[in-house]
Image (cartoon, rainbow, N blue to C red; front, top):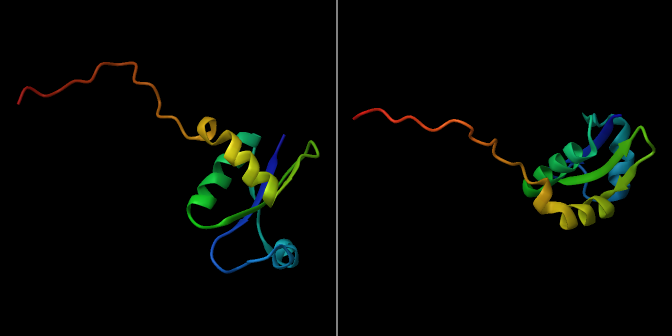
Length: 94
C-alpha cells in the first residue's frame, strides 16, 4: 500500500484552486504507511507549509481540512518517539 502526500511551503499555492492547478506539476512524497504520511504532514505544518492532500492506493483521500483535523486528534501518537535505550551509558573515567 502506498500513500502520496502533496504539500507546499511558501507562496507556491495559497488557495485550493491554485493547488489543483499546480498539482500535475508537483511531485508527491510517497509513504508505505498512512501514519508516516501524516507525520510528514505535521512536519510540513510546523514549517509553515500546507499538506493539501493525502491519497492512498486503498482509495483513502484526505483533503487539507481532513488532514488538519486528523493531526489535531492524533498529534500525540504521531510525534516521533526516541528509540529506547537498552544499554546502560558508559562514561569515561575523567
